[in-house]
Every structure is written in C-alpha cells, then in structure tokens.
Image (cartoon, rainbow, N blue to C red; front, side, top):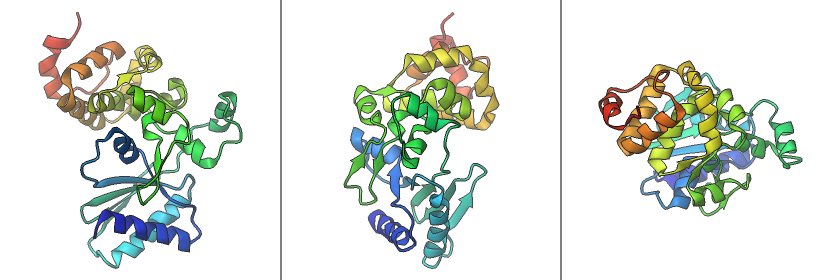
Amino acid sequence: MVVLDILAQIATLARENGIPEPFIVGGLPRDKLLGRVSKTNDIDLTTGDDSIHKLADLCHRHFFRKFPNINFRRFDDGHAQMQVGPLRLDFSSAYYSPNVEPLLSRAGVGDSTPMQQELFSRDFTCNTLLATLNLREIKDLTGLAIPDIQKKLLRTPLPPAVTLNNNVKRIARIPYLAAKLGFEVEPAIISWVRKNPEKIAQSKPGYVRGRLQKAMDEDPERTIHLMNEMRLWRHAAIPESMREHMGRFRHA
C-alpha cells in the first residue's frame, strides 16, 4: 500500500466521521519546502484540536483489519503512533502552550484559531508548516515558517522562555535540528539557554544523548559550537563520540 493511498484513506475516515480536516505537520512539509524529501516514511498528523485522538483510534481500527500485526502506541503526553507497513504515523498530542491565546493576542494575532494555537505551541517555526494529505498544498498559518526556512533560521514560535521552558526536551533539539538542517540559531534562543543551561538536565538522559549523537553525526563542528554557546557541557548527558571531539572544538 503506497503512502498517498494510506493518507487518502485517513482523509476519508476523517470526513465520514465529522472530524476536522487533518493535515501533515512538521518535518515533511518543512523538508518538502527545503527540497530534502527523498523518501517518506515518517508523517506527523494534526487536526488542530483533540479530535486527532479520535482519528488515531479510528485509523487503528481501520488499518488493523488490513494489517493485523499493526503496531499502535499511545504515549504519556497524549500523542499516538502507528506503524503501517514501512510508514510511521504520529498523531499530535493537541498540545497548547499555557496562556497561548493572550500571548498571541499581545503579539498581534487576534482571534486565533485552535489550529494556530497548536502551531504556535510547537517547538520551532520551521516545524509549523501544514501540508494537505495529498501533498499538493503547503500552508503557513503562523506566517513565520516560510520566511524562517528561507533564512535558514531556527526560531521559536513564542518567546524561548515560553516555548523551551514548557517542554525542556526541546533544548536538546536545538543542536540536532541546527546540525541536520544547516540552520543558524536565533540569538534569543542562545541567550535563554545560556541563562538556564540546567534545564536540559530535566530531560531523560537517554533522549538528550540520542539527540546530541544525531547532531554529531550530521555536523560535529556546528554541534560543539552550539554546546559552547549555550554552556550546556556541565548539564547535558554527553554521548561518547562527543567527548572525543571536546578537546578539539571546545573553547577554553
């Protein structure tokens, strides 16, 4: 079963069950805009509200009839994940940053929709793009994603003190995404992390170590530079491969 066929079936399930139109969000739309898509096997889905949980359950039942060995998991943060053949589908947790509506209102985004509130609550602007399930249209409801992707800039949709403090796992994603995409990091992010480097230790060491290892695999020099800039050495779980590079790249 090809990817577009699976996505078409998901669109039909949503339509027939009164669920708002689902969109692909995050990495795939970003990589499509960057011309990086070569093989699609990991897709994030959102409806912009908690109807995504109902859609996840519907998809599980629907595809289980065709793939009895389907792997379906629901995580503590509310998001669900389903493996259909080689394709991994992640259904959004429908997370909203606390006070996101007044924060957006003060930023000039009045009468924000639930979808906008979810997108502004995501980790970085480059991951807020939406794509229709037929992959024919990309939407930038924040108005920030396309300009920042074109500038190759990693930036938080809300102030770093909100975006990063609300989910400290995102700190480890800074060097990972910067290295993977070849992006520069917004100075406001660097500044906030430099003042709060201990926050990264609140994430599970295995997660941090894994993100940093992937960053090292992509671009060790950029990764080490960002670790220096953000003063994370004393607080982050460091993979062994990074220790080998510390003597060469770490500033005195």
